[in-house]
Image (cartoon, rainbow, N blue to C red; front, side, top):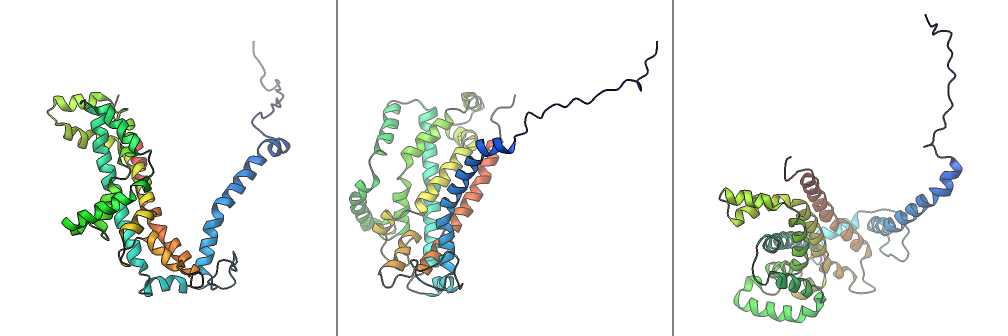
Length: 305
């Protein structure tokens, strides 16, 4: 028995596309979400656009300036590097240097403390961890007077770490958020399998070798995140830097920006906007560099199965 396939006619079945969304349904269910996203984006980007516009504006006044300036100029940027009263280049370098060194030391010391709380067993471990968290509850400005007196006394013995020195400011910044950072890193280290420590100990590794060669590379993602957060906070810190630094050349960027608006009638808003715009570049650059470390750390596995 033979079948004539040409005689068999198959009618195409019209199956509705269930994933297709009609325009009326999109307007009813999705349009308001896009509208909220657009409004939030405009609200977030408006101050940035205004600062960019003010930095290139010929009119040195924020109250009468327009979002789209009638005339543009680069005088606000050139004045930053030519005026001896406002050494912007020194301020930018000081902020980047102090924030980078303090953030690196902060993360390293917090990682050491986290390893001790996570892996080592000693008397008073839980009480010490709770004490570190309890200290972070109190606002930082409560210790400003004590920090000032302490730095004065340290400066009498070690002038390099006293008042109006970057090493002294780094020393104060280093102990600022170690407790909270140590608690965050400890939570990440607790997820690392303890079998790795035991295998390294069998091979003759010391506790510090286990920390440096095994635990620290695996904790690189959380270390990069904490480093970014700490760097950004220290880069924009104002109160402690304003108290501990006095000379014009040693000021950080956050403290130096106040010199542009010391007087109501002599405020240089254009230069202030230009300085704020250029001052954001180190933060963006540091974030991009550390972001690569986060991605590379997340793609590496601890145990191969």
